[in-house]
Amino acid sequence: MCIALTFASCNKTEPANIEPEATTTQTEETLKPSETQKISIVGMKFTPNVIEAKSGDTLIFTNNDIVAHNVTQLPGKKWASPLLQPGESWTFVPTQSDSLFCSIHPTMKGYINLQ
Image 1 (spheres, helix red, strand yellow):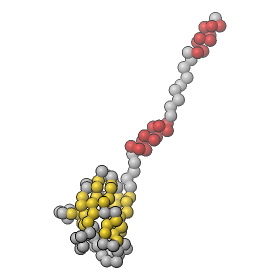
Image 2: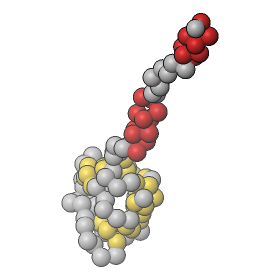
Image 3: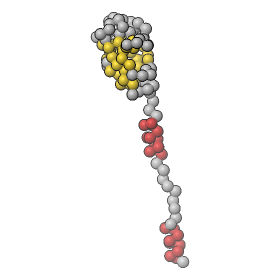
Image 4: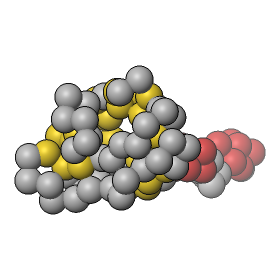
C-alpha cells in the first residue's frame, strides 16, 4: 500500500507554467505602431533624400532653409505640399513609394521607399 501511494503521488500532474512574456513580445513585434519621421529641407536638399517608411508612418517635412520650398510628387504631381516658408512644416502620410522634388528648385529630389 505504501508503494501505491508513492507511485500515485509521482504521477500527480501540476498545471503547466505559461510564460505570458513570450506572447506579449510576439504581439509587440507584430503590432508596431507607426512612426513619425522628420525630413529637413536645408541647403537646397531634402535630408535624408531617401526616406525609408512603413505603411502608416507620418513624414514631417520642415523647411530649415533661407528660401521657400515645396514637396511635390514626381512625375505626375499627384500630391504636393503648400509653399513652405522658412520655419514652416508640412505633414504627410504616404500610401506608396514615390519620387519627390521641389517644383520651385527642380534639382532638389528625393525618394520615399514605402515598405
